[in-house]
Length: 155
Image (cartoon, rainbow, N blue to C red):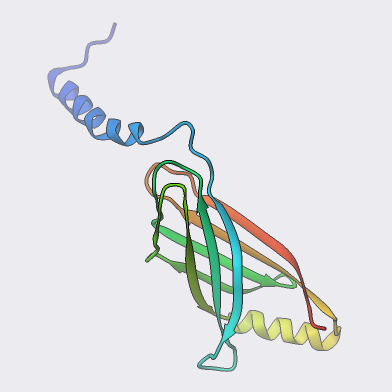
């Protein structure tokens, strides 16, 4: 059996004392929260392209509050990543509760020009969209990833 010298033993003990409370907080019965896109609208922009507001509903089915550290998201139209953004000022979602997150972002000019160019070449009655959201629950939680996709009809 390998013996740990005195100084290393103290460091190992201190490390375990710091890590143990975090591990105790990891609930084996943790259920992944549900995230629904509840709103997507354009806002007046400062340039040629508009800004966007995206609303998400987060449902927490767990017995502990969900303290989100951050969120990142991407919105694509016809395969063009039109809006990308991040936010870090997020509400705490109570245990067995739900909350709303409102995100704002502006369009990517180059992706917007490519999309408009494509629309002019081949007009369509509807567009494919995709939205990817990653919620960061903090230190020991795995990121919560949500993907929503479908079509937007112009008529």
